[in-house]
Length: 137
Image (cartoon, rainbow, N blue to C red; front, side):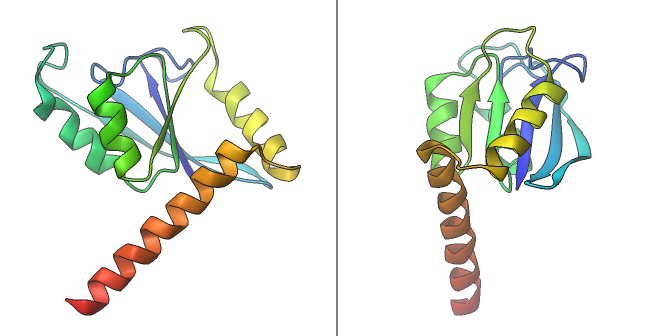
């Protein structure tokens, strides 16, 4: 599964979703994790009330299962969930991406909590729906 992290330094989960200029994406499984890409965003990202600024982010991380953020607005969170991406708030801006990835790998090796099982299942369902929709077009 793909996991995204809003970051300003590529080390910590320390950026607000709407204001993030960088989102790092990793592939995670019970075998480990690997870096996929850094998504970069331009423009006036701090303009509150500008819902257009999050649209490119929603599209860019649409294939991710989870996005870790330090903060996120209610409408952005709702739009992510509708796309099948689960937003999760980091405990603090000091939380490190590598530590979170290691915890996720360990969790996947064991018995994932209900919220993670639901997120994984939801992403599979969204993918199946997309394939079925493409087949009927």
